[in-house]
Image (tube, rainbow, N blue to C red):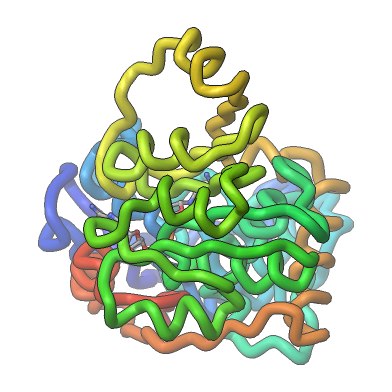
Length: 326
Ligand SMILES: NC(=O)c1ccc[n+]([C@@H]2O[C@H](COP(=O)([O-])OP(=O)(O)OC[C@H]3O[C@@H](n4cnc5c(N)ncnc54)[C@H](OP(=O)(O)O)[C@@H]3O)[C@@H](O)[C@H]2O)c1
């Protein structure tokens, strides 16, 4: 039986994303066949599409997260059964599709209270915000933190959660139009990149000290300002490169700037073990249920409109989750 998916024959602009028909597979041992209900469009998909994160083989179906209904399970599957609604946020890529076979140990049960679009469009971003505020740097009362792209998908969740944990949250955005949204997400101060002197304003807001941690998903455009915004022994968490590849860093500069720490963090290293994956998922779902973080899905597209979704995300015109509804 055939199903539809969004595949690309080569790296390139949004136009390389096209609908194709593929043959449905049966699940092998340890695998599950999913009827996909909503697939998230994330910035990592843009990096896959452009070839900045290389793809081994073409044609390639991209997409790292979705929510789906379990239709059939292979032998030895214990994590779920037919009729369960589950989410995933994991390699290998291939989520932009009506059907998909996935390894069962990467699937997480979804609470009934979450609708398909919210679960399928915010799971990856929610897990990311979770490990960033709980594990990479455990945010607590008294911390001053900087979050770049504060009105973006990850940024909105990160800001709300850090505010709930008691931090002073300084967000940055790329334009005036996004300031109000960043404020609604808990930012005590919102700076506009390109307009404001970010390090100077961060020091002003922290009695000269600087921030305990800067979460930077933008990359080269903000990297120097991020380092210069930190307090002595502060931590720069780079976790994305929306503005391009990062330059090399002379480690001795960290000594000269105040014995700074830098890490380049990736979700899949924080969710490798199933136990850790389930704990982070449960913490995110709980944060949604308790209203600690509120996530509105404003951007919905049909599977065949994936190119448009990519153009909007890359053009900085989206705020929050983007979903493809197969
Ligand atoms: N390492 C991990 O574990 C992990 C996991 C998930 C996501 N990420 C990263 O986190 C970031 C946010 O992901 P997301 O999917 O939620 O996207 P998003 O934040 O909704 O969109 C990206 C935002 O980055 C900002 N930006 C700044 N310079 C840009 C440029 N040159 N081109 C495009 N955007 C630019 C824009 O906000 P402004 O207009 O306000 O500047 C844009 O809206 C991405 O960099 C992604 O790769 C990392």
